[in-house]
Length: 224
Length: 324
Image (cartoon, rainbow over all chains, first blue to last red; front, side, top):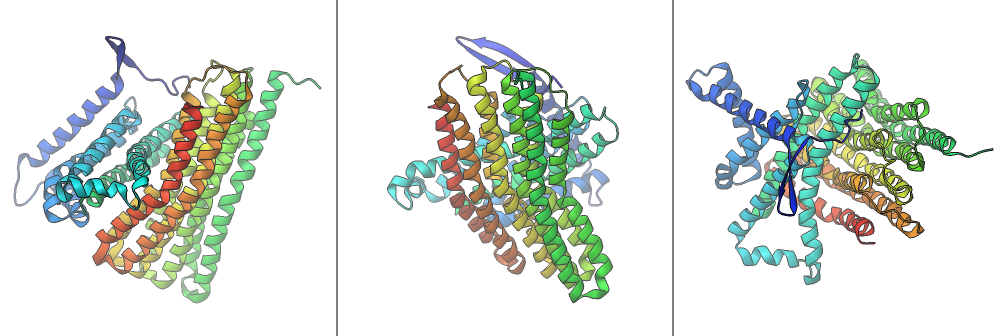
């Protein structure tokens, strides 16, 4: 129980600042990347007209994700940004599922991972906005409906980063805290597998999907 | 009667436990009543299916009750936990944990009744969709529980993390504020998420072929309706983990308590409002799937505007924490 809210950190002093690296998160992120690379390699190794089992799974995931992206964005934008969308979803999915294996933790349990992905989505959506509308039209939208609303519009935009990243972080970290406390109280009898199935598999899948869809829809809101 | 630290901590734990279960019983009962009312209507219109509808009603009610069960767990823990002999910040933390869980269970309890009721009505209209409607109901009401889960996480953290290292004076008020912030903000988001989930069950029963689009827009709409409760969670975390300088003046404590109350109350309205936007978007997605992308965009922009009041509340509570 004493572990609640503690992280292992590597602290590197740079001048008067300290750069803190959360070691566990880095290792877990590497594991996720390795699993994804392995899956991609195995799925695309022997591409055939009559696909093998892994190729079918890969095609199913990529095909349905592409359909969702094209529904929200135009065809042109969808083809350009689909690789990012697909990578984001698969990374988050494997990250959120990682916690059901004992001794492994979700990288998304650390705020730094969702926050950096949220900032990435924010930057991409505004880049798309500037590129499709031109800077003048993009900037003038902040002064709608009245010019003095600018600071509030700006805060509203920035709060999207907060909400998108804290949604993922709160769900995953909340799930892991509930699993930790309940396992401790019940001496790990009976309940933990069900809790892991709910918070790891179910909530993890839904939150990965929601994060990806919100990133896509934010891009589409900026593009129109 | 001697009031030493230990008896005050016990007193706070008991009050917290009572509040957790008492407040936590409100929402789920209303939600389950809504499900049962819809089931009655469904049975009276299509009596042949009374068995299926009855089963679906019981499953829906069982899921709707989970918020209340979270409150029961927290209440029992508060009553029987080894409270130890810490300083007075612990007393504030225990009472705050009870308040947070009790208030936080209200919204999700009411909200998760809507998908159950709409699924019963849907089975009445389209008996062959029973399985799909039950699945959709389960997904919708499970996602509805997110605000209650946030409240439970904050309650568990308040109960089990050792806050005795900080100075008692502003810390006790900060912990009380943390409970109010997540607990109150969860009310609106829970109800709002339920509205969207209910509309999705209704939509699927009207247009079964749109199930994919309806589920997608429901999940996105629910996620955005939960934003106020996420802001509440953020303010709670800051209140719990920021180290405040010791202070003897009352105004520092008042500012921290007010920060929590401000975010909590400010989150109720936007949560319900966002849920209404999501409800309408889900409903019309089922009827007019051709314009799905436009519906999704309009919903998100409308929700962003209705959320601005929650953002103002967050700005004010951050000012109360960091500036004053």
